[in-house]
Image (cartoon, rainbow, N blue to C red; front, side, top):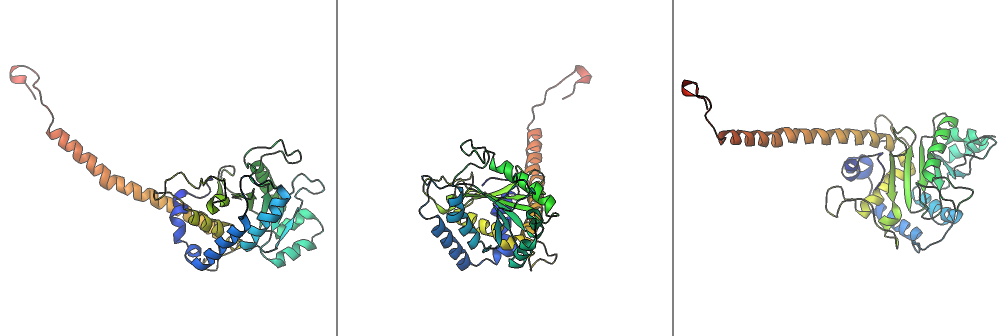
Length: 299
């Protein structure tokens, strides 16, 4: 699982303590996983579907099971009369915001009513390098997303801060205000978690059962938690009205601090004590030698 937006400790353990995770029923998760299996059925590394087909057959359907419905607009231009920056989708909080966007006469003004952007690529296209076989879209998709987010942040008056980038199998979440946007994203390899034929499972580097291991079911729960529409909206259980993302970012930081404090306390109470004891034992068994002559001899 790539990306550094959230710490590995938080994604494997801390997230389980969040109200959203605990309120996600097993039955609802089972239905979500079943829907994903239906969408990805028949796909493999041998599938050759272009970008438009990937959107229609995979991405738009996944948006549906993530609760976005049809509350998005395709190809909303970010760059005025030019067509240099045109994300594939502008996503909305609800139908009302989408309707307000449609009342705008200029494309870039529609972003003021948006919630996030989505950029789609063809099935299995690499996200971090350019592709010369795509003459109209040769740039690295990740660089393209960062450019789109910067522009969307401006034209939306800072309403749009989040972007999804996907090639159907891998889904990434980018945050405009991250310290290092190129590294601090959150990624789930959905196809790998679903066991799509030919796709190696690289959800984590740890062996099953080891600390840090992320099982397929856990990865898919993370996908739902962070990519569903509700995650982008204020949470009714949070007394400050934060979105799930804002809450998770803060909790991840606090969880990391707690882990560091616990480790520091263990080092001081256990390891330091053992080291001091070992040094004391070594001193008791130290070999002594005499130095000096006559009355000036010392050990």
